[in-house]
Image (tube, rainbow, N blue to C red; front, side, top):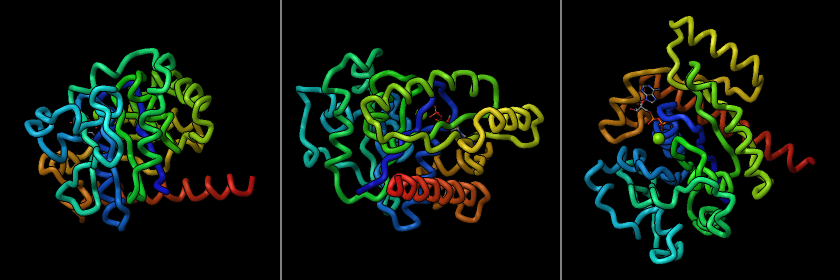
Length: 269
Ligand SMILES: Nc1ncnc2c1ncn2[C@@H]1O[C@H](COP(=O)(O)OP(=O)(O)O)[C@@H](O)[C@H]1O
Ligand SMILES: [Mg+2]
C-alpha cells in the first residue's frame, strides 16, 4: 500500500506545489514509484512537468475533474496518471476544468467527499502518493484530507504564512471525523532566507508554538528550485549536487522516518 501525503495551506505561494515537485524527485531517485495528484484547478504542478499549453488543453476526462464529475466519471483503470520524463514520477493532472468542483462547504457534498479516497485506495503500483492542494480549504483540499494518511503544512516564516494556521488545524480536525487515520506529519518551514532576522524570528516563534510538529529540515529560498522547475525536472535530477537537492532529500528522509515511527506507534497501540 502506498503512503499518501497531502500538502495543505490556505495561503498561496508558500511552496506547496514546489515541495511536491522536487520531493517527488527524491522519492523517485530512491527507487520509490511516486504518484503526484494535482488537486489544484490552477494546475501548476501539472504545468511544471508538462508545460502550460499541454495542460490547459487537456479534456476534463483526462484530469482529476473526471473523479468529481458524474458525466465524465470513469473508473480508475481508465484514468491512468501520465508518465513524466523523470523515471518513477507519474502525475494525475488538473486544469481549469476542476474549478467548478472546488466548492466551499465541502462537508455538504455527500459521497463526492470520498471520490479521491476511492481512487487512492484502488490505484496500484505506487509507493508514495503526494497530493498538491489549492490555496483554500474548499472541496479539493477537503477530499485530499479525506484521502490522505498524512498532512504536511508548508509555512513561509513570515506573518502572512503563519497567520492562518489555526484555520488549517481546524480543517484537519474536521477531516479526521471522516478519516480518523489522518495525521499531521509536520509543519514545513519553506522559502526561508536564514540571513533575514525576520525569518529567523518567525522560525523560532513557529518552533516555540508548535514544538516537534515543526520539521527539522528547512527549505531555503533558492534559485536552484526555480531553475530546475523551468527545465521541468526536480532539483534532485537537474542539479543533484546543489544544496537545494541535498535539503530536498533530507526532507524526504525525515518525512519517511516520521511515518515509520508513527506506524510503529500505531501498531504498538
Ligand atoms: N524554496 C523556494 N525557493 C525559490 N522559489 C520558490 C521556492 N518555493 C517556491 N518557490 C517559487 O514561488 C512560487 C510559488 O510557489 P508554489 O510552490 O507554486 O506555491 P503554492 O503552491 O503554495 O501556491 C513559484 O514560482 C515557485 O517556483
Ligand atoms: Mg500550488
